[in-house]
Image 1 (cartoon, rainbow, N blue to C red):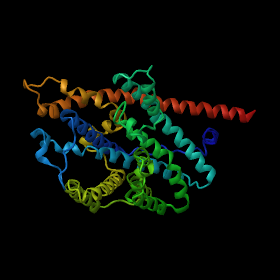
Image 2: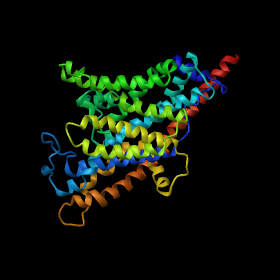
Image 3: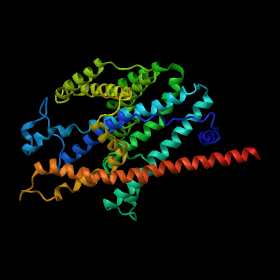
Image 4: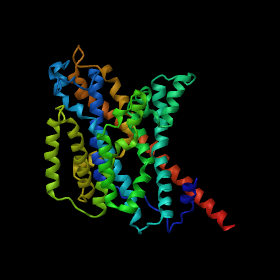
Length: 401
């Protein structure tokens, strides 16, 4: 309640501006991220599996059910798209705070509460109403019975964004919703980052990053015997901090006008090349996970620092990145019917489904997602802005009496 009072009472002279500058090349990265997720789910839909079984040390390529699975095996790297989304999120949220803090510089606790209030207000209207619409759409498409206590429980838990804490809810209604719950939970604990940053600045981000990695690699979860409790604790947002804080660290570099040289682009390429074989070996797989966090953080740093005009291909990708939130929520509208697409061959053909079928599905989903972006996402943001303006006008009128 205090946070709402703070943002309503903010005058134009002191009103924080956490929206920040739009970095168009981050939309390019968002486009790559959502395309990777799309192809990953295409692979899983066609073959009813998106991974190969493991031998003692590496994937068992001989166990592939069809030669096409090996040809399109690169699609199995699609979950990296979700990781990239988390890194970009960490950058954008922390950048909004750094920008607000320095224009003009504000350090008081009262002003910090003001920022947090406005931050939550804008995030709420940016994320939650479009999510509720998508939740309703998928509940109807999946045949959920709104008179069934069991189904209503699933929908309610999803509406509260708590479904990632239980395996029975995790992939229910719609499998991709788990990461949206994690994202909102990361927002919920972001004030911890702000309060640490007020005191320790850059050292706070580095310290929290190191501590979160240490916690993730500790045996704390191994000490919990109850399987459901172990799963729930393992889903706490602090366990997703390493990738999210990697993005926040990139925001610190951009805010301090530390420009990456060409050597960093070379480092990203080399590290990416190292990740591919390392991720396919059991001994190096965990280390490869942290390597990709660093790769994505540097890629975001480079993208945000590059102020050159966009190239032709980048301009094509920007609209995809802009509607990537809706595309993430709705892309499986086109993925699941792949098997119903008439193949040019009489028999079922994964070659068709994973090439022309994927392209057709992507085009259809892009159209749906762009409409959702314009009609639902932008409308929700506009509604939040109008309500905030009215609340401020009412508050001003009350103070004047």
